[in-house]
Amino acid sequence: MLDPILDILAHASDCDSKENLEQDIKTKIDALIFDSVLKLGENIQLGDVLVKTANAYVYNHAGSKLSSIIYYDDASEDIIKEVALQVVAMDPQYVSIDDVPADQIEKLTNTVKKQLEKE
Image (cartoon, rainbow, N blue to C red):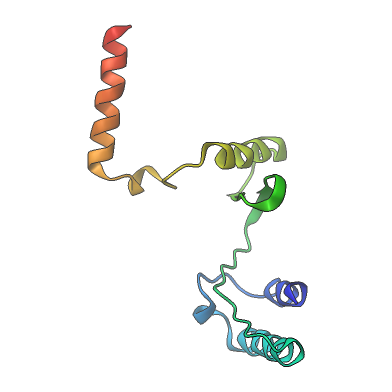
């Protein structure tokens, strides 16, 4: 069931939620879900959708329990692959420095200052 939905989404424009999908795309996906519900007798729902048409590298860690998606413009695939792997390995709490609360930045700055003073 997932492959036909992904095939449809492959032709969609960039959007950040299923509500912002183009109407014809939504209609096709809803029809697929409806058909699957009838066949399986199970309540199936599409959680949400993010469509990006930029270059992306997807890394799935063993068992596919952790994944990362790295969007890039112009970079070596080897570098992007390493970044994707490190994102999964390091489990970052924030995507951007702008997302880090001010008190966290202050705490980390003080920790680094103390370490530098010891050295």
